[in-house]
Amino acid sequence: MEKKKEISMAVIRRLPKYQRYLYELMRHDIDRISSKELSEKIGFTASQIRQDLNNFGDFGQQGYGYNVKDLLGKINSILGLDHEYNIVIIGAGNIGQAVANYTKFDRLGFKLSAIFDVNPKLVGIKIRDVKIKDIDELDDYLKNNKVDLGVICVPKSNAQSVCDILVANGVEGIWNFAPIDLETGGKVIIENVHLSESLLTLTYLLNCQKNNTD
Ligand code: NAI
Image (cartoon, rainbow, N blue to C red; front, side, top):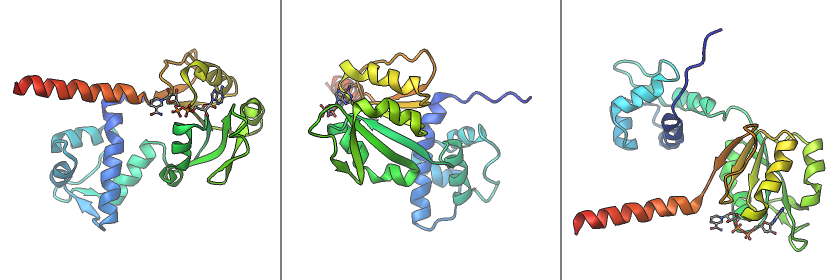
């Protein structure tokens, strides 16, 4: 069997940016673009773009450039966006509600099927037609419904126990907003969104810039 080529995380992390720009081009009815033009828009060099895309196949043609719709379709498929994902959110506070209310996730194919919280004042309330359920129902819900992704938006003290329930019930991916490194025994894929780490990168860069201009 042919061995699958290992793609670097740096390339994978650039793909959503390609996707965003290609959608933008589609919205402006642009159906083809050269790697030079794409490079000017996106801010990566033309050679970087060619190298990135060559990881996935032979895109673009000499003298023609890229067909925007085809390339977008291919990138969406590489990103796994050619099918839908059933998601549940655990923790319906500030972050949980913000994620639940963001309709673009829905358009990308992430179908919010349930939200869970421990707070009786929140249980029963609807966010975009999805009722918040009691956390005690999570285990049963996962046993009776196919859920692909869990979004953890609870305080860090409770994040591991929520993660354990998701993992025990076969959820394959976790989008974790709690500031904690979750243990899963390597069974699921975790993508952390640590907002404060991103903020600290900003303060570091700001201070570097200041020190260089002083
Ligand atoms: P929040 O306090 O507004 O909401 C947390 C929700 O989780 C509450 O509704 C609470 O009842 C629920 N909850 C607690 N234990 C639970 C459990 N075992 N099962 C189900 N629900 C449970 O908190 P917020 O602001 O939404 O933050 C969520 C997570 O994201 C926290 O871990 C926080 O540290 C992290 N975070 C939040 C940021 C922010 O800007 N709000 C920034 C960075 C990280």
